[in-house]
Image 1 (tube, helix red, strand yellow):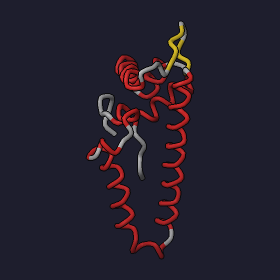
Image 2 (cartoon, rainbow, N blue to C red):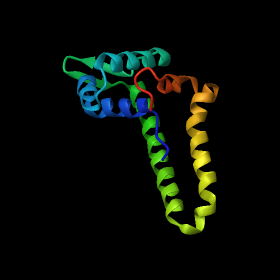
Image 3 (cartoon, rainbow, N blue to C red):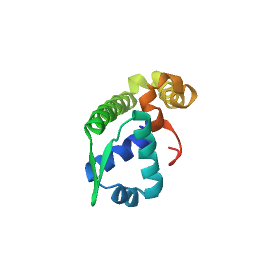
Amino acid sequence: MFRPPRHYLYLDAVARAGSIRKVAAKLGVDSTALNRKILEIEDELGMPMFERLAKGVRLTTAGEVLIDAIRRNLSDIDAANAQIEQLQANPANAPLMPEIKRIVADLEAGRRRNPASIPPVMRPLFSARLQPY
């Protein structure tokens, strides 16, 4: 199964929950590290992704644009995983399975090997400072 970058999942969770601290506690991540990562992404964007409030956070317009892109990407990954599972379930596709697994592994490794292929605004999402996946 191809896994999306953890940062996609973290940012989506923070946007949905409206709280960095709640998401960090739920996911077992240090809230300070999560907040630092968000600040790095905001620095890369050149504008805030979240508005800091007394009781949480709220997406800015720039944050909404980025979260929409992340959610589309997560949806695409889910769809690809579902299609791969269908291929795996069909015995006629058995000869193709090693090739499919290689392609998925290459996709995962490609993010790490060729960061230049990642759009600059998305590069902070691929760093491994929070947790490797």
